[in-house]
Length: 118
Length: 115
Image (cartoon, rainbow over all chains, first blue to last red; front, side):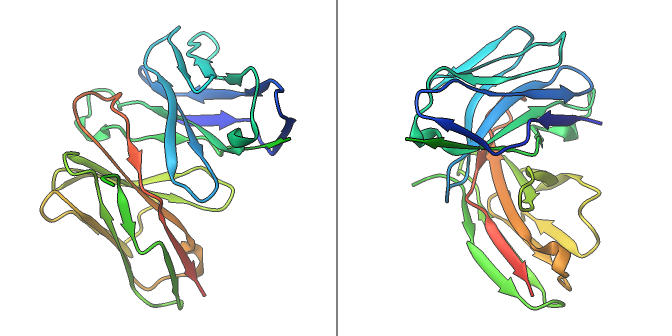
């Protein structure tokens, strides 16, 4: 079955530090890959996505590149801010062959809590 | 605000009681999903509707769980004879079926505590 593994947190950084959160996946077919973010007290929000190999998703200074050869989708940001403190989830969407019922069902990793200190 | 809304936001119930949660998706979205998230874990898929048809159910969804989407708009998730292990955040999401890459929008969730 499909699965996503991401590094455990918490990750504690100082403002303006470089952030990397590792994510690897196992999937049948050709998955789409996503990073979702959950800020304190809020719902999950899509941060970025990539739908095919070598695609780079980017948003709000965050980037992730779909690496099919290493089945990875690591999240990076060059200079974090206090406002980036949140829980980050890597996820994939992979239809089960031609089964229509799969829809856009997401399989999530366990989440990585990031705390940025001033 | 036309995002996904869930009601109630919090529910405390005694073991053995039945509870029902409601989800109102974004109005033009035809797909609706329920997920469960326990503390420190990522969301886990429970079930999925396209319009009013329930097309997939996870093995996590025991016989005590039932979900409906009667008119293809709002959805309800009912848990009968609640157990302490049902304590979790229940998330609803909706999307359009144009392509499989279409973004899923999440509600803020209903936090269930079974005492």
